[in-house]
Image (cartoon, rainbow, N blue to C red; front, side, top):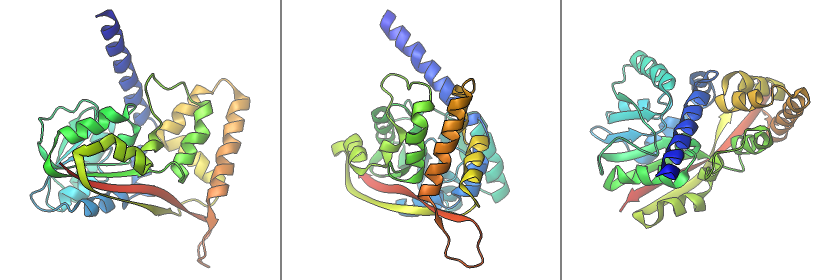
Length: 283
């Protein structure tokens, strides 16, 4: 009993830190300014339409949930971080989208078995620490014959490589936690879902990001706005030499990944960020 209680307390602390991390900076701006079309891409791939019962897990500000609602679906957007849900509500109101916003942990969803026709996540569930627990919960609440839909950053893409770059500077991960970009590896996701799904379709694709004029501008944007990056810099704030080293490594990563745009009238750089799009039918 003592071990179980300690484990429960540790998990609550992990989730509290996770919740606080995603409230740092300005993730609503990141989603809107850098990947505004990614959620709609997932909605299209899942075939969501009028009357579909949809759960978007780790929904953030609703970059997939809102397009699903605008397509006529009956949508619940769930996330661990209430600040993101509140921002999503305001965005939805401005667009005339009606949906339910629910604070919830993807590793312990407060919904009955087989409740939804589609359970999806757009660069969200990948950040839950225990991958199998998140996959199990998504499958549990999806009805037989329903759709599981996922968009996740790949390990080889820019965001995956950014997490690899930041890892030596980050606090130690909690016991049992797995790296987020593994959700962008098709074999890993297939293993998580196992024989509980069929008709799996997976492909890698990219989203074009051309907001930045230099690698330094990109680095500084993430330092201001992206919760995981902010948390890493806070972890090394008392070590100026490590801050300077991470500054250099992120610039080098961006410079390595970027390529100059071919448009004569465009300034700066354009980047293609790779993600895995996977859909599967619940058995």
